[in-house]
Length: 60
Image (cartoon, rainbow, N blue to C red; front, side, top):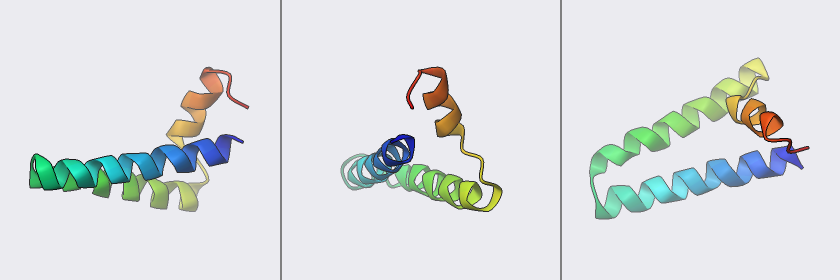
């Protein structure tokens, strides 16, 4: 369940940052890159900050 929530959050962040890039400022692409780098890092290290945050909120 937690993995699905993490994927939904990451996907939402990417879509929101793309909309912000189009309508607000191109620098929002840095946020998209940040999310992508975090996904890549978590696939390599098997550690995800969002997972730790969800654990603290009691999400199983």
